[in-house]
Structures are given as C-alpha cells and as structure tokens.
Image 1 (tube, one colour):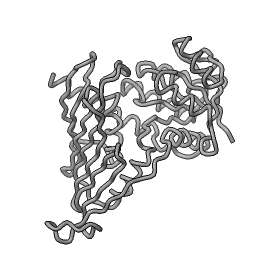
Image 2: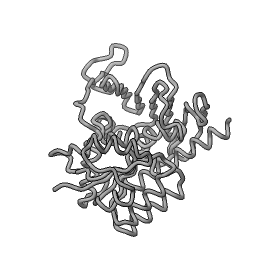
Image 3: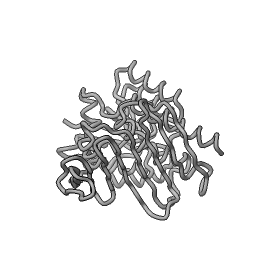
Image 4: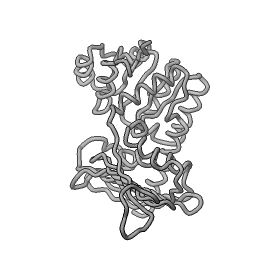
Length: 315
C-alpha cells in the first residue's frame, strides 16, 4: 500500500528526496504527489523531473498523507507546524529545528495530534553504521573518535559545520554511548562563511567515557572514519573504503606482539540509505515506532547547540 507524500524544499537534498519518492518501489512505498519550493523556477524544474505538480505549500500538504520537509533550517519550525496542524505525518530533515524551543514545540504538537515526527538522521539507516553497531555489541567501549571532513562546497552555509555535518556523528555517538554527555568542550573557526566551518568537539559521558568528533567543510580531501576503543581492544572503520577492522582477543589474524589477540576484518554490502530511511518513515506512518523520532532529534540538536556555544565561548 503506497503512502502519498509531498516534499517541501527542492534544494540539493530535497531534490534527492523527491526523486526517490517519485520512483517508489517494492522496498519504498512512498508515492510523491506534489512538491513545493520558495523558488518557483526551482520548484517547476524538480517537479517536472519527478512528474508531479509544483504547488503552494498549503496545497501540497493538503494533497498528501505525509510530508517531507527539506527546506533550510530556519524554516523548519514554521513548515513543520503547518504540516502537523494539517494533520499530516512529518519527516523533518536534520536538524529537527534551529532551537530547542522550536524542536520541543514540534514534538509536543506531533504527540498532541497523534502524528509521526521522524528526523532525517540518514546515517542511522546506512549499512556501514549497522555493521558498526553489530561489531560494538557486547563490548565495553570507553572512547569514540569520529571524523567527517570534506572540501568546500557553497551550500548549507546558513548554518555552522556543527549543524551541517557534525550533527550526523553526534547522533551516531549518542546512539553508541546510550545517552547524553555530561560535559561538552569544543573549538572551531570561521573560514569561508559567517559560521564555524570546522569544529572539534569533546563529549564527556558518565563513567569517564568520552568521544572526540571532528568536522570540517573546508578540508583538502574527503574523509569519513570512526574509531572505537574499549576493554576488548579497538575497532577502526573507514566509511569511504568500506572497511572495518577489530582488534580483540582471539581475532583471526594473530598479532605477534600481542599474544592472544588478533584482528578480524569485515566490510558491508551497501544499500540505498535514503530509500531505507524513507521506507522506515512509511513503516512509522503505518504504526511502527520511528527509528529516529523527535526525542533523538532533540538530543542531537541539544548537543550540537552546546558545541556551538562552546566554540563561541572560545572565540
């Protein structure tokens, strides 16, 4: 059974959402019925590409059962409220909102109206992260190191690199750590925009556990890595090269200098993370709990804003 959806926002990622929903498929029951963008020319171009009408926001919402909001962050609260007040399910691209007050208001409205509010932390649906979760299961991880850097591209400059890129790894670390940090420290700087373009954050969790997260949109090259340290050994993940290696007791490849320890190497079979995310939204609209709901979106935003505040304090 298909789910009629509209997309509000036809920019870089909004277009991807619209194209994916317009194609549907056995693993993705979404069916795009309308599209809206504040730029009429862009709306018309993407709508034509998807074979649906470009409509004013209110008409696009009325035509759908659920709505994907992929507009710039400053519009999330207003558009999200419009969607929920119309009685439609809401998929909100990350971050859930620009402020905690806005995010909590959307969460409360969704609960009051009995509507789904899913937040677009797409990395939760990646084959790579699922491999990481499986590899960490049962281990006593005490430190996580995440790196997400890329060359400069002139988009998403209305927010800092923290809300643009780092928030992905903040969400993943919170999932792996099982809760919010007790302490947040960070440094960063503006380079190509009016907001921080690179940042390094240190999150302190209960029991002395910690995470270091580095994000940059002004790097020389793209890099995506995660390192997990714990009592059993180390896990190292290179997301771009699709490799995962775990040093632990009894690993397959013996380490001569560490008797009893060995390295297990693995990878993963890629799947379409956006399709998996949209399919998850459809399941949530059908009654399942969303994998990344309002609570998770608010938690990631809370930490991201604390990182931004720490950067400002050190500026």
